[in-house]
Length: 138
Image (cartoon, rainbow, N blue to C red):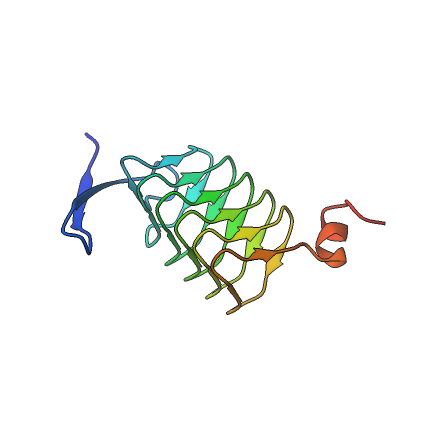
């Protein structure tokens, strides 16, 4: 069985090619870099130039836009959206239906609550509870 591709035309009229990721069967652009240990749900998308690192989880209906980075062991919740050029740090969690704006940053270990929005270019910092969860605070 060969690699299967799906093609979409984006809003600029450019034809984009996606392949099914080995772990989860989610759609990953051919120019995106997704570690084989990352899970990409079959209903999730990873756009061109994006990176999903080791052990990350991209949940049902989630969308990772162009040039975004989802770092090691981060979790992107159900129907969550990570904007163009945004960075989600190691062990961070973006809750269900939450949105991380373009070029925004989610700090290592931080939790973005359900339905919350991190503004374009903004930063979401880890709370004391977030750091305690990871064993990084007293």
